Image 1 (cartoon, rainbow, N blue to C red):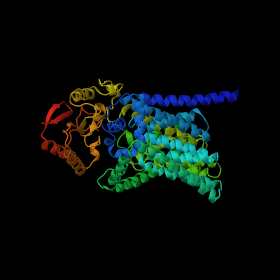
Image 2 (tube, one colour):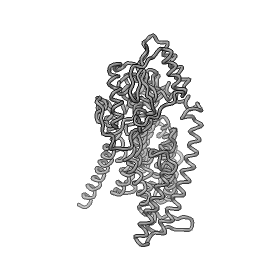
Image 3 (tube, rainbow, N blue to C red):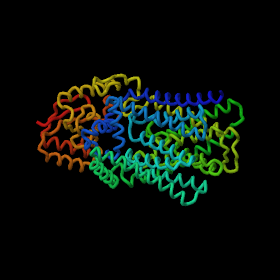
Image 4 (spheres, rainbow, N blue to C red):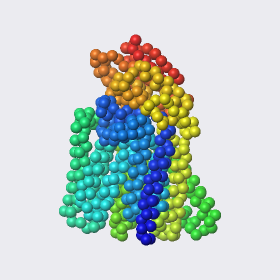
Length: 575
């Protein structure tokens, strides 16, 4: 009877965790209207099978677009439908994380609470629509779970499936090809279990074979969709970006950013661990008032460190939290290697995913938050359960690591609560002001500020008179969302033209001029749509900026005239 009650309690814990994560995500999907990143991705999802060339180089993330398209098709194709997709992906990620970590840490409410904290912390300041970052995290979690179970239970077929999942993940986000590095987990386990070199090689080869199978399956889907030529063109575009020193994704720039991030992560982590554990060790056994006061002080200091040198809520903690997980996971791998190889294996997999998840992004280590699903809860639970640690000649007292874990959780909770309340992707920091909807079928259930709702609503009324779905439209100054809302095709085959250099834009415009068709309607923003406050505080754009000069030269050449404007948008048509 007791075992039955325990099983029922554990099942309830999983259900409550899933419900809590979904509700936490669901409460935030109603607010915010971003015209930049969200518009770019949603336009691609919407037009994957009607105008795939409009996705541009982003087509290399074909599986992300296919999954996004599927969510739209199933849930109605509104902005809200893609945000519901995000909530479902995050919920599934939390449940998978709990089920995997519980194999080593045991099923408990504490573990569920730590994973809930991880979900809220990792999702506190990001775009809340289904996209390649949250899908990357989900695919890595599926791969990690299969890899762990395949090795511990000696199931070779699972290793093949792991490879296939990670191979498919390459089409979620191109840098995910680094998932191949997870084959090193097989080598680690083989060394610990004293496998023969032949068995090690065989299992590694089957992992590689599965990876190729995953690549082949998705490539077959791409070919069947008629997108293979566009995909190869996208690879060329990515290659050009990596070779362009002026690009935000240049190879040299990404390497410099990587080295800078790793150095700071290690420095922040060592400072946190040494100071935190020594102080925690000192207060163990002292009066409750002393313990409480010092914990509050440590929480405040760690909160400050998390936010130090950050550019805002989206990248806070990128060095301190990531570096802390790096070092603790390395300690777990080494300490548990002989005594508990399965825990050592899990820590190794978690650390490797944390390391490779952000690679290839111009956000650098800030995107490591998408690799925290296993790393952060594993580290916190290991400390919470009373790890026996030494700092040099000092052996920590029993309870010191639990106090340290408590401080980390308090600091992360405070930062998460503040960021969750104040951050909406490129929209107001005042959630109480975002209660105004826009009368448009694709914006049902989407609320923004009164001022933004007004200028967008006015623009959409005018656009309904000027264009119809599938018409070409030239929209610039970071207003990709307009293509999604009007269902128009990007004139230059990309809804976010700021990706291109001025030289490339000029070449594309000249190429389009050669076609014997009418010129498009042009819509442009007066201000910076990456600002959270538009249109209240308009950050007017520099008209001398090279890209804008290219567009204005095109407008003068073809006699475009202004036919409508409001506080933030302008509409032009050829005379």
